Length: 617
Image (cartoon, rainbow, N blue to C red; front, side, top):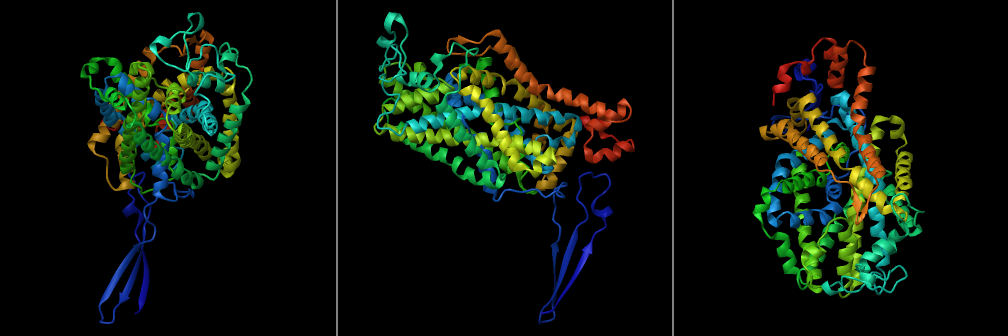
């Protein structure tokens, strides 16, 4: 058999018209002439340079497997809030009726925003700040996301340290939160939780061994008078925090090549444990009553605005949009990856996990309510109190309680680790893509980031650390995230242009997003986010922990933390406008035009200055 080879190159003017800013470059095709024995000639062609990212010139690592990416995104989005927040909201807001506003907001806002971030990172192949070359004046939106992720790391790692402390304490024959015979217990501690045992000496309210173990045995809260009396870091929690930081560093130091392997354990383990806990939970007495309370449908609650507000806010926070994590993860995808399918899969898994975890949680809550002869409302709560007080208390009453406690806290540990990895990756990728010095020394930069979070996390492991934790949780990742996502969707759908963004997605996947997605990005999602931002400010309540009310200076500090991240957007915009050359009109043109189109600005062609750009969908 004889072979002949020739290379055919198409003229660039044919494949890349001047008006297509993001079109592909020249394509070379290899033609192979094959001569068969019977004289028949066949030709075979191969595309030598298949479609690549416009920024493919820089060699960027990619995920080893597609599953590494999916597990990383699922592991980040499915976190502790899926276990401690959603089931409680569902119970509080009409049971099954809460699924109506939740699914509505998921379809019209949650999934479109998730899809947008995955596509944005995959096309531009940069972190949260670098993607804003599509609209340079809004690069501050990326820095806002990075800063919020850093703030979250200051207190989120502490939750993992608590879980690790509980895990290590579970390797005993009798769990330390079972009885009131320990050095940390107070006279108010009572082994029984019953209506006739609600008061202790001198009429003071009684507490349970599990509550006292968490607040007095672990946190040492009784040794602090408030946020202005923190005390020194507790060595036990500090040691656990060190272990968490070491684990995070070695999961992240080599980039997605190492983190992509870690998530095979951290993202899948929670589902195994949840299933085991579900099988155990539904066999407990009172479990059916708990599940019935969880799913009881009260459609009249849908007439209350608070139910819809809770659903809207839960959607924003449960999917993890606005933190730069989805952008960072997707930036390591292959350019032709189907990000639309990824968005549907991961958001569906997230919602199903939230809903399914409710059966686990309320089967145990129903058991606790029946065991102590109290209404389910007396034991149902959200936040750290659910997973560090109520659940451990329930586990302590089971046969083989230590085994079940180990299983439960392993789940919490894995749920927390992959979410913390996502937040750190947002910071590392976002800044490393902006500054080549950091990119060249990624391992050292990763070490500096995790050390910085460790040092500031020490405030949360002091005697009064729970007050610092509560303050950060209340302010660092609340209104500021909603504001960041609002500015992000405005920047992509309005300044960059939903039509141009759709062209980018078509370039990657071969299909333009349907009209539904474009309408959501341009109108529905911005209106939804504006509504949630206004509501979150209008319904603001000062933070508190139990009966402790924070002083005014602490609330002011909290708002300062929130403002520090949000202010980056206008500060950077002003800085960018001052640095650009030319008249005011030219400055604005360069600031809102993608960097790849600055050549058109020089010739006076600015599509953002045309009415068509703002009206097209």
